[in-house]
Amino acid sequence: MTTKETVLTVENLKTSFFTDDGEIPAVDGVDFHVKEGEILGIVGESGCGKSVTSLSIMGLVPKPPGKIVDGKILFQNEDLTKASERRMRQIRGNDIAMIFQEPMTSLNPVFTIGNQLMEAIRIHNKWSKAKARERAVEMMKLVGLPRSEELMDEYPHQLSGGMRQRVMIAMAMVCDPKLLIADEPTTALDVTIQAQILKLMRDLNKDLNTAIIMITHDLGVVAEVCDRIIVMYSGKVVEEGDVQTIFKNPQHPYTKGLIQSVPDMRKKQQRLYSIPGNVPKPGAVKEGCRFAARCEFAFDRCWSENPELYKTDDYHQTRCFLHDSKVGVGV
Image (tube, rainbow, N blue to C red):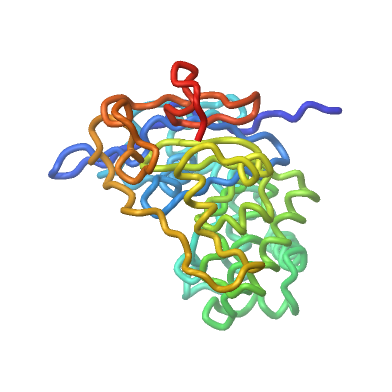
């Protein structure tokens, strides 16, 4: 069996926003890696730091007020935190591509679909207009868009939501990136189109061996497409493992709460479980476990110390004192 190369390694990433009220840490010491051909899911509630993590990787955190204050982002052994803006423009869209949440706001309304697709090809590959158009049409067919030739001359408002999202995927994949970051790619779509988009992403991952980071709050999406999951809460990774292990045997109380919140269609209608409270504002919790205020298992230590990631087995780890060997009990 061939060992897969690690495409991206994130080490102790810390991204903050500097405001009149001081420094606000949005991402606070995040570590993970992605191998070629792997789909990694990043899940958590709104405000947990998922999107800021992806923007940090792309070098798109607005400056000011945002800034990467510590850590490394190693893409094929190159530290992107030290890369110049010129170098990042070479990498974005070519080696690392991103699909944003809402395609209507990501596509320029005054340029045709073809113009926007061909722009990336011509910037990165220096191809002729005719060759770039041929490649754009080929990519649109690959993502399942009908009458691709005609769509090249249409504008974003003339397409449905599902078609626009397919255009965004085609635009992201047109230069054969090694890493694709998909930030809530199916949020604005109905369930039928959502299923088609997820199948398309799985097929592209399989056919082109592209590594994918799937950012979502939808555990159904994660179960459908991902190989591994990291669960984020308040700027930190609280659990990491493969999909089957985490769904069958979640170890962090927050992960358990997220899974319990998913409706079970096999049971009669019942009141959905919800985790009490809300995600704290970044920087609000000065000491102790950030989930303690919402956790039914919290004890004295949780309010005074910040837990580290404890290994439960070789491929599974969780940030919870209940898995510290000194405590010796599990959730």
